[in-house]
Length: 198
Image (cartoon, rainbow, N blue to C red; front, side):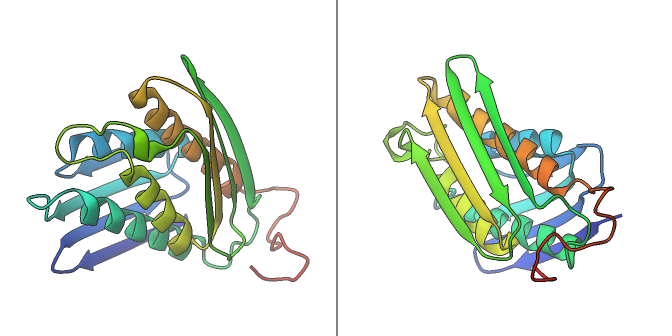
């Protein structure tokens, strides 16, 4: 099974993460930011990646360092678990409706980090409590893309309810990951690139 364990200990955060890409979408998330915990549970559920996240952070300042470092740790763990990426589909895309909201997420585990966000500006939306500013979703996704060495494109086509917008983003990201990381049985152990490596 494709598993990884990562620990990150800095003056700002202390994070432990265990993942199993070939899991069942089971999650255990202990962190100081309730809304972010909720979003991570959606990512795990829809990606089918088992996640055990133990998170401590300097939330007495704000939630920025904690969310950012979780993106770094999750991206690093996924990259480690995938190793040479043999036999995966590599590409994945999901368009997900949530009531009045519609979001598309597309990914490519190309080895080249790139993050693009289009649509409704999350920076213009109200946050969730004192610890989760709406723009922190962008910080998380940016760091996830960088440290998983992947293309990650997010397009919020439309939506009004801020909770629905964020939840649709995390769910669609999970679904896109599931499609991209599934074993391609026709490919066998081949690397999905004409270059022979990713």
